Image (tube, rainbow over all chains, first blue to last red; front, side, top):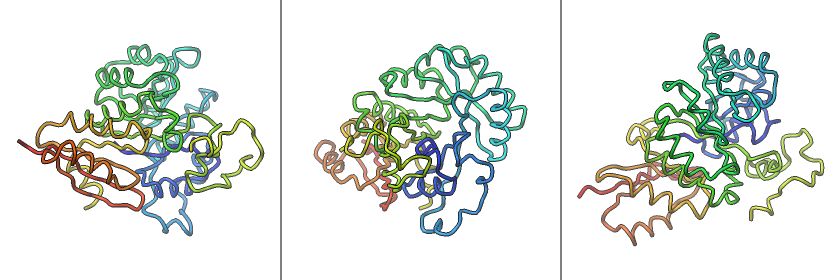
Length: 244
Length: 85
């Protein structure tokens, strides 16, 4: 089990700063979401710059997740190219209630593999069982674990029983500075089961939504945020006072 | 000890940094409870888990092993083992 930091915690942060933030928090790497500043090709492979040596070795990129709600044709091509360039697996989103279904996601995984990159389907929490059952039994998978959607205890146990070693990446929403708000939603039980199973994949720490941006900025040591409106007043934002 | 060596030493890792505070100790003891004698897991935390050790000492004295693999400043790694009978 290796904990990594998703670029979703700071979509405007450049790659070097995201890697530095992950390293400061003692994480093993970062998960990039395509479309975020850190996944900009110009930042990939760039010199980390002055100040980066103040921390431990920068956390490397471990996975690349496609952006939400983008044009599948364009995104699939870009995602495969960038994943190949980074040498990391591409995670393709899948839904059972409106978005691209398991079949479509699997087609795109095949397309990315033909382009020379590793790829796998990111299973949703709502409809997890339906989505996994629709995939071939030897297909590696990732899981978008969202404790807001369901208590993770049952789905986690079911997935480990059903997918076992095929599970390579877990994207856990709402951990880190939000963790206290996920009490009673099965996060502890899921992590214990992963440990007992000897899970050797990655667990990506991601926010449950953009409302928590202020908390994440502070947790990552960037009280001023990474720009893109982070200084403007937004009454929907949850502040540090909300987590005690 | 290098990180890669630590990961080779044991395959089970429990990172509690993502777990809600009140669920951390139950998750740790659930993992410990699933160990066979002689097995171990690596606990990863963002602070020195001294209170946890007190709880182990109170509830599992003589039945557990505790070895620090890394002691901060960002991460603490402790190998917790179930002592072979």
